[in-house]
Amino acid sequence: MVELTTLHLIFSLFLGFIILFLITRQDTSLICIAGVFALALVATGTLTGSISGIFNSFSYAIKELTPTILVISVIVAMSKVLEQTGIIDVMVKPFEKLMKNANVTFWVVGILMMIVSFFFWPSPAVALLGAVLLPLAIRSGLPPIGVALAMNLFGHGIALSGDFVIQGAPKITADAAGLPVSEVVSASVPLVIVMGAVTTITAFIMLKRDMKQGKIDTTPTVNAEVKKEAGLLKSWQRRLFAILIPIIFGLDIVAMFYFKLQGGDATALIGGTAVIILLVLSMLTYKKKGLEKVTESFIDGFQFGFKVFGPVIPIAAFFYLGDSGFFQILGNALPANSTGIVNDLGLALAHSMPMNSGVAAGTLTLVGAITGLDGSGFSGISLAGSVAALFSHAIGGGAAVLTALGQVSAIWVGGGTLIPWALIPVAAICNVSPFELARRNLIPVVVGLVVTTIVAMFLI
Image 1 (cartoon, rainbow, N blue to C red):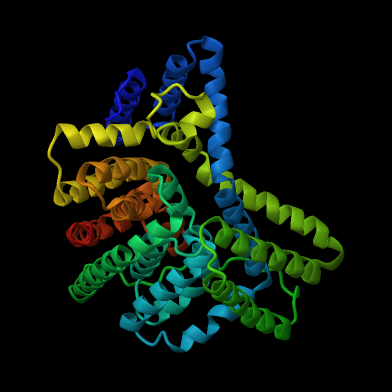
Image 2 (cartoon, helix red, strand yellow):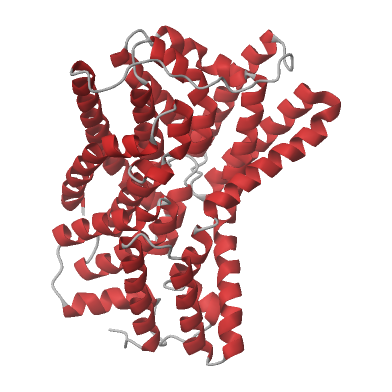
């Protein structure tokens, strides 16, 4: 077993502080930066080295996260053009015939939201679909809170917690756990299915019960339609692009399977496709003003991307020091036979206390949920990956399942379905209270987490 040093003690101490801050709903950026400073101070032995270590750790984290930030930014940029041109209206029109009653509409809205979220991520998907689907759903008898519930659980719950296409979440957790992205994605599939099925079915049953008992206001309250710029494209052009765009992204999926593209390669393919679609649509739609519109769209997209990932960078910087990032940022200050602070702590834990799959799975679910309390599911999944790696060493396996479980738990709680300030986008689109939506999500999500944790115990 590797000898534990002062660096291991410091990392463990600040890890405890981070969990404490999350429990008390305090921001963890400052404590993570302090942890980086302390680790760098001990590793380099100089004040200048510790100060430089903060910047270098940020630089390393940004470098690791850049592909994810980029793909989200360009997809958001593309989604704005689709919305402005009205192409998205044409894309969802076929589903209007399916939305005949409240029961069917709940699942149609949810499944459509899930599919779009796999490619566009939930936040831009809400903007793309919300204003279009809400009037259709209300006319079918589904109240606004039901629309918000379906969009939120299927989008910010199922689609984001799995993130099978863009693979932003699996990339972060896999890096923190020291695993290939493909392993985490594969391990998350049964967990995402179980969590999604249990949660949505429970939520639907409770929604129908309350509608029947008259506890839900079914008065139509619809926000103003998102303004479109009329006359940008002809009707046949909108129909053509509404058909071509899903086909193009579908071909991307085929290419991923055929060429075995995963992780960064899959993300790059989706991102590059989104950029090309953005360029073609902008130039065709705005003609002489196309160059300006391209730039405006990219600015909007990057503002969104860095706003989402701003809190993630300092937190990721600290957790990357728990793995191979330590050697690249601070050099060889660990013992010669060390494989990283987290792995060392895992080996120490395995030799110092009993651990089994049940305890490990339950703990990962709690850790994931706690890290999501800040309302950003992504800011805590690095911790979930690190803890999963630690526990897998202690029980002798199950790293991918534990990592996926922590990811699912963190994103369902904070990404989010339970934290009111994370629910603002979908609540605003549907004109409902984010606190009411969070309250309605609570029981279904808790039930789903309990069942998913039990399933994970048998998969480890």
